[in-house]
Image (cartoon, rainbow, N blue to C red):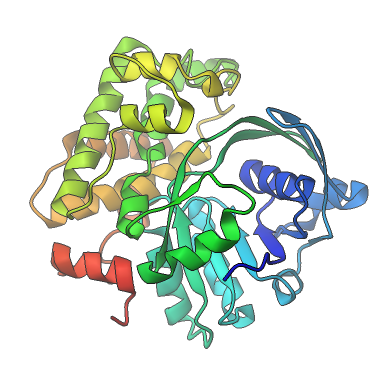
Length: 365
């Protein structure tokens, strides 16, 4: 599959707005969908997104809509850019409109995102059989800088992608790489799920800076000012456990430090130094409140599935569990009951080999 497809970008937050604008800027035929019309009213009025930062220019969008059927009707590539807590709802909403020739890519899937998307399509008795893939991380470090503007601070150098079934990852890459050659193939969605470095950095940095966020409304550089040597040691403990759970499932993944070097060319003797050396992190401010996606998304949809998989096979990931529990205390909720556990995905009781097979071949394998 080599023909370039019209692209639907679903979600107009920090990620979707930047991706839609940049794809349009470089010549793609793009439709931007957002559930709430008011959120994209100004984008619709001006006809696109103004970009600043590492890339500049105006991305003219063919259509801006809140009608999902309209967005998917004449597009072939669907770039899902909603937070992970919206993946299930988007899958349910897409189910009546999907076709066999659709390629759906979660940007990113966080942990087990593609599995959850397919699981929900099956639950909704979707009659189509689209190709569903997930990226390990979002390709940009970006922020919305206005109602129709986006700041792209840095484009990452390498972003792994895997599809279900994994034999069709090449089909997804055939339509992604002409736009972004940074997309690379991963062996399976377990690889992309455990390459999810957002789980390492986002929740722990947020929680260890809770007073600063609440007292300053996030007026500091999240990664640069928010990570000290001590915070770096916590991140390294979380990262070691991510790698340990991945190893239990037979998934070879890079450490956070190795990933920083690959994605951003940032090096250091430890994780603290590597983060401080990452120019792409400079200027990215902290969230203004504790009600942000670094906790609402990354805890239940990144950390909980990792911990659930570890617990299922005899590992107790104490650092990851501590972050999950602390986030629950701050938000007065139980993230264990809300997250993507093996049970919620229909994977409980399966062996590591059986989970690898489902992640590679799909539920019907």
